Image 1 (cartoon, rainbow, N blue to C red):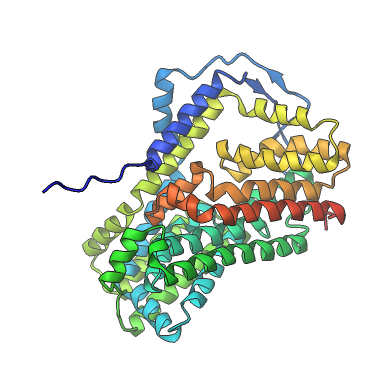
Image 2: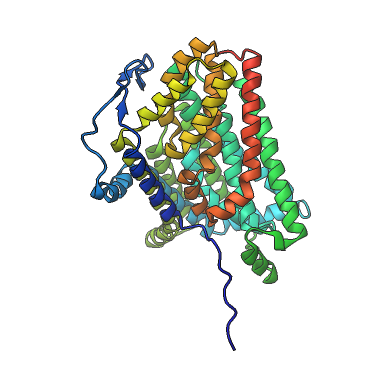
Length: 465
C-alpha cells in the first residue's frame, strides 16, 4: 500500500540558516553602499558618540573577502561570549530547581487555586515578563522562556501561548522604556536629558502596549480552547490533548518552598543589581552560580550529580547561545563593511528641510528598519542620537520626543525581525514562520499606537521633566 505523500510547501529555514543569510546580505550591501565614517568623541557623560559634523566617505582598506564571511562566525562567538556564558550558566542552574520538582509543585499549587480561570494565570506571568522588560532584562530573561512554555502547557494551552506571554510581555516592558538603561537611559544621556525623565508619559505608553499585547494573547487563547485545530502548533497540541498530558503533580514541601524563595531572591537581586549597582552579565552569572550552590545544599544534590544536572540544563540553550554568536557575527561584518555611518548619514540628509511631523515619521521608520541590521539598543543610540540631537533643534522637536521616537522604533521589532527574534524563539522551540503568524497583528497594533503616542507627545510639548 502506497504511503500518502507528504504535503509540500514552504518551511521556514532553521535559525542558523536565517542568520547566515542575513550575514550574506550584509556582505552584498558592503559592495553596494559606499563606506563612510564619522569621527568618534567622548561626551560629557563619558559615552563615546559620533561627531555629526565630521562625516566623510572613506576607502575601506579591509573589504569583506571570501574568508572574512566565515571567520566572522568565530569572531562573533568571541564577541558574544559574555551573553552566551550567562545563558549557559543561568539555564544550567535553573535546571537544578526544575529537577527538584519545586517548579512542578508551584505550578500545581497555582492550578489548584485557579481551576477554570486559566487565563488569569496567563495574565499574571505576562505581567511578570512585562516587569522584566521594564527593568531592561533583555537577554537576561531568556532562561525563563522555557518555563513560560511549561506554564502554558500546564494551563492546557499550546506552546505558542507560553512563548507569547514571555516574548510579547518582555517586548511591552522593554519598549516602554520606563527604567531601560540600554535604550532610554543611554539616549537621554547622549542628548543631555535627566536620566529616566518623562517617566509619566512612558508609563501611559506602557499601559497602551500592555493592553494590546494582552488582548492578542486572549484572542489566541480563546480561539484554541474553542477549536484546538486552529492552534499554530496543531500537531503537538492535539497529541498533547489526546494523551491527556499534565504537568507534575508534585506536592509542595518545605524544601521546595525554600528553593523557590531562593529563586525569587535571585530574581530580585538581579533586578536591583542591574538598576542600582550597574551589574552586567558577569555579575548576573555569578549570582546564578551562588543559586546553584544553595539549591544543591537544599535539595541534597551531590557535587558530581549537581554538575551532571547543570550540564543537562546548559545543553538546552545550546541553539540559542549559538544563535547569539551568529547574531554577533552580523555586527562584525557591519563594522568591517563601514556602512553603518553611511546609512545614518543618508537618513540625516533625508530629514533636512522636512516638517516636524514628517521628520518624526521618517525617524520612527528608519530606526525600526535599522533595527533589522543593528539589534543592540545602546549600540544604535550612540550612532543615531548624536545625529538626531542637532536635527531636533533645527526642526524645533523636543529632545524628549526624539528619545521616545527612538525608543519605540528600537523596542518593538526586537522580537519581530529575525536577527534577534530567532534567538528568543529557539529558547521556546517555536519556528519563525509560526511566530509571524501569531504576532503580526499584535505588532502592527504596537507600531500604529507607538506613532500615535509620538504624535501626542509632540502635540503636548512632551518635555524633559
